[in-house]
Length: 286
Image 1 (cartoon, rainbow, N blue to C red):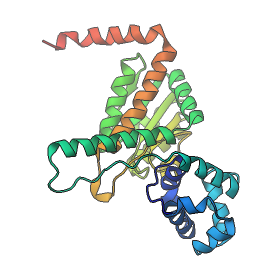
Image 2 (cartoon, one colour):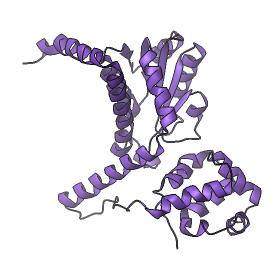
Image 3 (cartoon, rainbow, N blue to C red):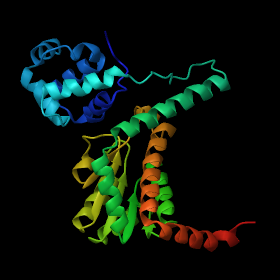
């Protein structure tokens, strides 16, 4: 039986690593994604033969996915397939009326958030919260649609009383990154994980001694190499679908998780700063 949904946690893990795999590893990965129900009954030799690769390639792929071996990988895959996530319609078709479009979009967004939750690793999440709590200053970096998320994130944490910032000009971003210190945190947001400006800024921040956090959908992307902490999201877009709302939604949700958790850890202080910041702008409203 073929499984082309790729909605289980293990299958999501494969998808998030895909661009960082070798060509032969990608052959194995694609075979697994398309035949997940069969793979859980196969030996490493059988899988290698059907994917037209060697056993060492299969084992290397398992290690890259953070499994101790092929049996460990199969166990995780089997657990996913016991209760597969229901496949929800995503494609908008010509002729769909507004109600059908709304149902498809909301179903798609729900699935994106469910899968983002599956990809979040508790250890990385805890480290991110601890770093943000201890930070003297938090700087968010992003361009394009991720730049808007970075600005929203800076405003959210500023309302908690955490000095935070996000600038849009790439030169100012570089200067801000370069003067961060070991008491600061730099957060880079990039859906693909390959945005040059964001990676360069995170590298500058890391060299300056700051703790670096990457929020990306690609676990094998360049931004991961310069991040101390990695938080994975789910993004469904091809090169012609840049800035998709679903990808942005998963980014904002991770920021929301971080800010709410930090707020809880701050206890009464967060409420105090929310009141202070609210009063500071109250005169700007009618």
